[in-house]
Image (cartoon, rainbow, N blue to C red; front, side, top):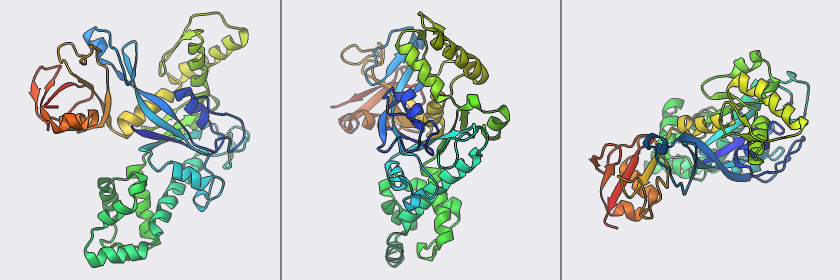
Length: 393
């Protein structure tokens, strides 16, 4: 399963964001290092479900469907807060970084209101520049990767030269524990414009490579949290394609209110509907969220962060395997029961392996349910495809 790391310095709302998306109710408090052990849970990316298109009722097994919106599970890991010089072991830095080894991408929770200093201690709104937090987190990850590379570097690079091993092969073996693929290393090497022989790399070259491979293998989306407390000027400084104004506390409040039946709300919606009676404090809280978050930004931003991370930052697509392309169901009659996330450009055989290796090894042909056409193993899939794979197994 895809894993997304929820990162940032202490006290910026990481665990609130995590709880809002997973309802795991991990411990929250207003002081640094509340999170010591990484919290893991399941959050969901939103995508249109074909059930609405076909006017049918689906029976999801590995996901959820709410009013024609399919919520696809991804793994979330909320790690200990990062402080400057974490790569040297300061704070809980080493643990933080080790917990992120298998993350496919990172959502960096940034206090865009500037109300927490570099250590995560509360300060007056606007007293700290969020740009410093963005820069230091990227640098800490770069230094961490560089530190991993430096271990036994001279011996390995000399061996690579004497045996004619290409740098990407050596680096792929060295960085395999970080979930970094060889193609990502190749792209990083090209962008860093480094000497072909790794033995000639010095500190500067190694840092340049660490930066580029982090950009390739651990891309970062910015959740501009506490946006309701920040000025438009501050938000606009950072707002961009991969930076989203966010109010994790508002999302958590809406999800909780929905669970208790006070409101009708789907994660990611631009509004909510009041259903039941509530006390004055609860009503005022919802009025604040409506006025200062939903009307101002169009959503709390939390779900949008997940969706953008999954479908744009990681460039994944959602595909629905079925066993009957006419009824869109499995052998038990469950309609559109499963959905899988695959990298864009994946083929039918990639989907078959994702479902089960036996299905792929016995592959005969597949049928595109929308067109009714027979397609081969190398047919490139599109987001939302419904595919029936026919196999000997």
